Image 1 (tube, rainbow, N blue to C red):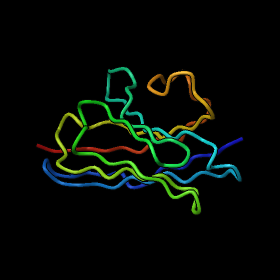
Image 2: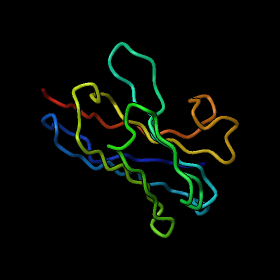
Image 3: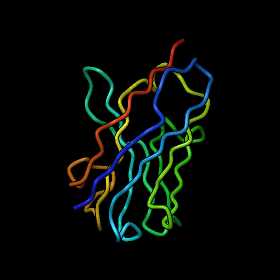
Length: 124
């Protein structure tokens, strides 16, 4: 069982930055693929970014590429999402999720463990 707790959301003006964190309670954190998804009001949950268990491989949705950066600290069981140059369309609830060897890292259905989500609101 893995428990995930996100933090760091809030209200920011367009062009600003936020840093989200996800803390995991598991002894085998370094075995897990970690991802961030987001869900805007009235929309489907969408993939944002992925990081491999070692942290050596990452991937981003085209909509955030060049603006968001994912990183993990396996010694601290945390994964962070640095979000820069925020836009109003980034407004959503952001969720971190974890899985070992997901079939498709971009699919929400590959993940059994989810955090409760943290709200990010970008005002224009």
